[in-house]
Length: 492
Image 1 (tube, rainbow, N blue to C red):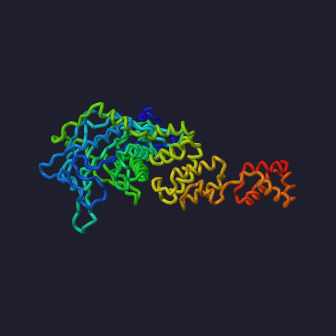
Image 2: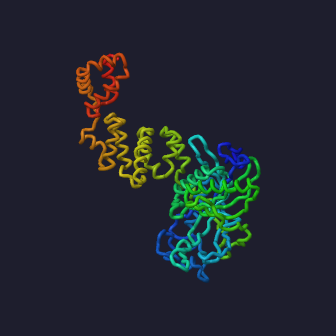
Image 3: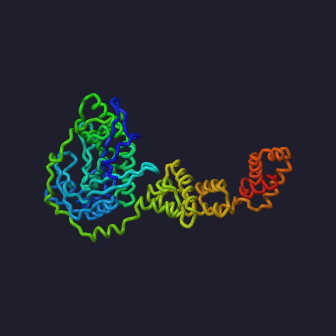
């Protein structure tokens, strides 16, 4: 279903003084391309160098320096387009977008305007295990990043660091298909996951490698789109959600007071929880776009695209569907596991040839739970997939109970080692020898005649006997065998 014709969802409307309002959101994501060199120069793209250490003469816009396209950046853009189910344009044009900014040494940004490298596409976004929306992609184009002005290094002067100047960005523009802060957040999360799977952007928002310009407008349900405001450079998924809510409320307030919305660019201040005006929005013609005379149109053939398509990794949606089909997982568990590629790989290493549901349960609840608590991720996990798989095997074989398994997980987490050897060495096996269990049960029955009378009248008392027998076996009695023996001996 095309989202433009989506009927307004009553749950997503915002209550105003004059009735309900619908918020309409479109996002422009600026994703820094993963490449060793910049878009038009050989300078390094590494983060965190000394100021102006990664700057070539091209980046500094020295006279007579000519840009040369970096093929790896082109590959990354095409691979991303394929991941967004988008049209790949075999011919695209680089334009100059003219504006003056202290950290833009050329006085223009090389970007793409009318003829971008990637055209329309769409991605599926899960809002919950049962609700999914389809979000249209308008375009993806390549452009160079600007440098960075620093205003806090000196009392009277601003400094400029050009390390980021000329780094390749993919600008991914969505259609105005999003209808709530939660939808916007879910969309950015999904897009970030796809980029990370493909390896075209690391999605690190703290370093500014993924930033969003958020376009927000409001309207009465069923009416045409309202005037939009653009909130620039929002650098966390949480802030994107907050910026949408705050801006929608601000616009509703103005409209309900009889005012009108000015199209403008705004900034979101998370500290104050408000957006404030930055500049009134220029239309595109103010930028005087024209084709860059130093760069030929970018052209490639079907073979180039087909080769990239063949080597794409399995993407999150396909992986999720396969996990559900192959391992019998719930849609929710499968979504959690495919959110990051390394998490999905870890799970598969644990699940191969084992009970998929048991593997998912241990990976999601025990392992991820513990990693979150300690601020680690799968790559720094003290418990390897082989170790966790060994633990799942021991439960499956009935060598240990679920309760013992938790103790074993703790030992492997803190001390390491092979789960099977630990169980042997420390005598952690659950007792399935019915003779030994019977002996313990006989002793408990003999010592508690009063309880034996009670349990015959009230079978739920059986739990007390189970507890005592477990205690006597040091928690190692096989619960199934124990229950059967107790029932037989007590005649219930």
